[in-house]
Length: 146
Image 1: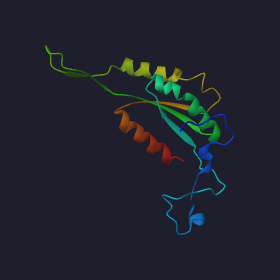
Image 2: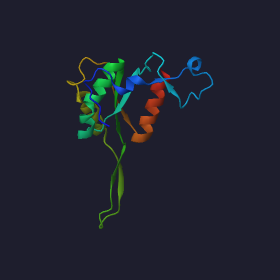
Image 3: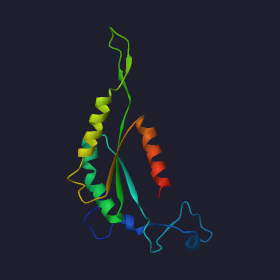
Image 4: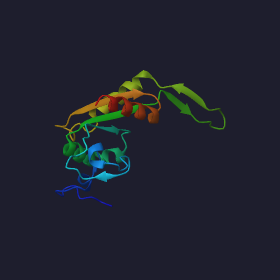
């Protein structure tokens, strides 16, 4: 389904999480009700890999962040190891990524969508590690600070 982001009422506005008081004996985990309160979204974690797809998602990120008055967390993760595959004449090898490359990626993140996200509260986080694990760790750490 494609949503018209310019419409006055977005489908996401129709759903609200149940509270214990409004749900009664209903299953809180699966039952959604309109109870007159929007689900707060204080932060949006947006992993950045500098791809075209990430750039194309910026309008959606802006829409949701504006709608919920959310802080935007841009996260880029640099894998600290670089693998060179086997070439047939030499075996595969793993090398540490040089510090200058990590610094370069952090600077690139500082410039990412700067103009597009002007006026939004944005934090830019650049970490080393395995992407999937770092994204989960960041989401958990930021979720705890609500």
